[in-house]
Length: 212
Image (cartoon, rainbow, N blue to C red):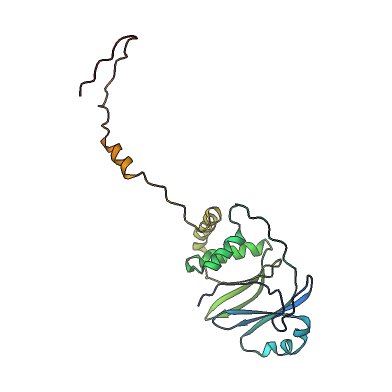
């Protein structure tokens, strides 16, 4: 299975279907279903009812916490800009490419230190530590495995992070090669003999023909 996961905060209670209003308290439950880490968002009445009372007894229960729903702002106009740590992390997680496992972990740690992500939970699965981070503004959850980096690996991973922040995940476009015609024409043009000098032509005089 793919350990990486991003789960957005629900916009309605996943028990009764009631839409959340801005600044409304809600409860999040987290379950490890082996195939994935499942998130369930509940309104206060559903949490106080049967859903909340029995949650910790359900198979795979990991954690519970309370949050405040914030209505998403209007989408800003798109702008061309370099990757930032969060946008890069989102793209890596969505790509599911295992070669970026160490990079995604370092990016998550960077964002945690900047207080842009918070560790909501950590647990063990098959001997590997799994972190669950929350983006406080959006409520999105990022599931990031700990790759178990050694000290002698950090410098290389940090270089990879810097390169991806500068250039993004997409490889640079290849330079367009010259056409065959242009190459052929170039090959047929003889180069001038070495050290050959052409004497200046006096004004009004006809240039002497070059002898091949």
